[in-house]
Image (cartoon, one colour):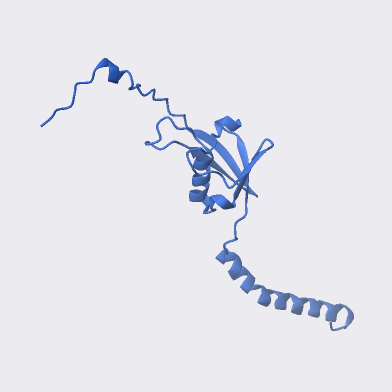
Length: 149
């Protein structure tokens, strides 16, 4: 049975200590989509030591908040626009693009509308409401001019 040789200075010189960078502080942004505006706080996960807050983080938070897929998201900020954000570790950092806490990012989404069931129900009652209004208009014209429409 052979044992491993002891590490000498020759081998330990090849091992570099990890310079663990401090995690970025959370980035708080306002995201505006149409007439909706909501606050987004972006944080790094515990296993992302030394990483930076990137487009991927923003796309994932928007997916969670709105259900809009990253490939359907397009962002605009001070003349910079990006769409279909990169979701890999190579994704550009948001602070590298000049974003800072409190900034407002405009989002345009190419997303299929989900029906609002209250609106659908209201549309279903329109026919009866219009027929009542038509009867009222008919009665008003009849009373004013003796004319039926």
